[in-house]
Image 1: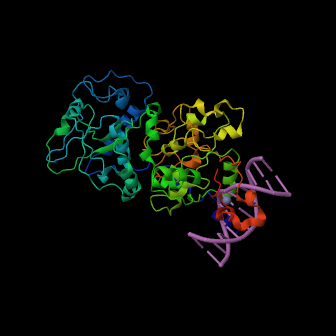
Image 2: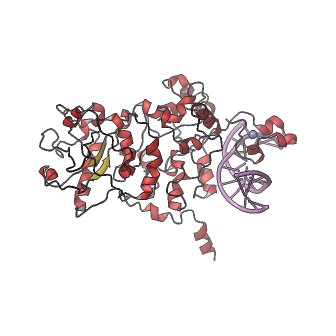
Image 3: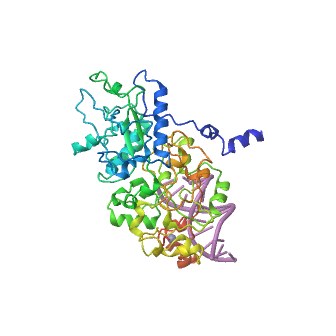
Amino acid sequence: MDMAKIGEASPLKGRTVSASIEVPKPSRMRKTSEEPTMTELMAAMVLSNLSCSPVFHNPPIEKGSFSPQTFNSNELEPGSWNRNSHSFSPIFIQPGSSNQPVVHTNSEKCKQENVALDSCSSGVQSDFVSDDPIEVDSGTILLQRSTPTPTKHPKDEKNNAMDVSEEPQDLRVPKLHVEELSIKQGSPAILHQEPKENETKHVLPISIPVLPQQIPLSYYLAPGFVRQPYAASLPGEFRMQLANSSPHQSPEIGSSAPGHMDSKIHRHLYRSVPYHKVSDDMSVPSPAGGSSPSTITFGSAPTGYYPFSNSPIPVASLSFSPSHYTKSLHVRSPLASTSQTSPYSSPAKSASVSLPAGYAILRDHPYPNISGWPNNCSTNFTVKSSVVQPGQQMQESPSPKTQFSLSPKSLPLGRKVRGDGKKCRKVYGMENRDMWCTACRWKKACQRFPD
DNA sequence: AGTGCCGGGTT
DNA sequence: AACCCGGCACT
Ligand SMILES: [Zn+2]
């Protein structure tokens, strides 16, 4: 009866599953053999510590060519790996394989690697080989590129295939990344222990997110970094701009995946605050094919709208979307219209970059989040101040599929500031409705006079 | 009351 | 996909 109906209607339905956030099985973390899970766990833990321990100061690696940025060496726990004492030489070369040891020196293309992480075995780019042999020496960290194994979930691959392919080669993202870290329980010696020829090394692909502060703005601003789906989801105005800069851009209305949250509730939640367009990254059509509720979840409806906390945090202080920089300057801050008095409303305040009208991005998701990371590690990528509180991110656990630790829904919501421009309706009047743009006629966001 | 437009329904 | 509209946020 009603109950049944209610059950049907309940937005939460089917969500409970994801709520139990099981740490997404690192799909890519395949076990080739008998490798004990413990090992992996340990590795994960270690890495966790490494990447997250806020305060860790590690003496610079002696001859490391590590840039502070990269490894922030601090991030390594002395005890864990004896990096300093060469006793442990992570560098491992795959025996019998022509693959060269890959050294990701820092920023180099950590980012890519990260992406790769997901599609790590896609073999597309992760094959980055350092030109500079020296780097290998410094190698304190490196690991080896194991044979590109297709072990990972096809899904993942699919997810990132696109991203990977589009990643600019020269992107420098200071994200610490250990592409494939093989950690064995035993001493390092084990690592080299009998090199079997084609045995695929059992490696644990790991990427360590770097501290937010370390992300160079350039990263976000990298022009080439805009991804199609991403761009497509941008507001018309913006997309148009993109179009100018990049030929391949469709002016069509970006569509966002419908959310599962009850629309009413959703709207209440999302509309109670000034609009702030937020990265649609997450609203990118579910790679997985998007039919599964759990998958779609993160592309919820007003997607892109994201609530800011009441505190007047300069939008500009947030992370930037790469695609937005084009618009910088002479853009009015959404907050500006909302609170005239806000000191932050002046673009000048935020370096030379301001967000496009009405939009702010808290974080980009170039790479999937590793489930194992503590929240505050991989989230809250804000340049200056964080609007998102750690606690807020845990509101909803992402389905394992999403791989993102943040779901738009779990983030504070905001909403687009209502454009003050006149739209077709106002311009032409009801009597000339036929002159309206189609969007207006359909009661959709005006295309002709986008905000 | 008027406007803008999201979400969802219909064709 | 095109089209329409209920209903809500906001002015
Ligand atoms: Zn219009």
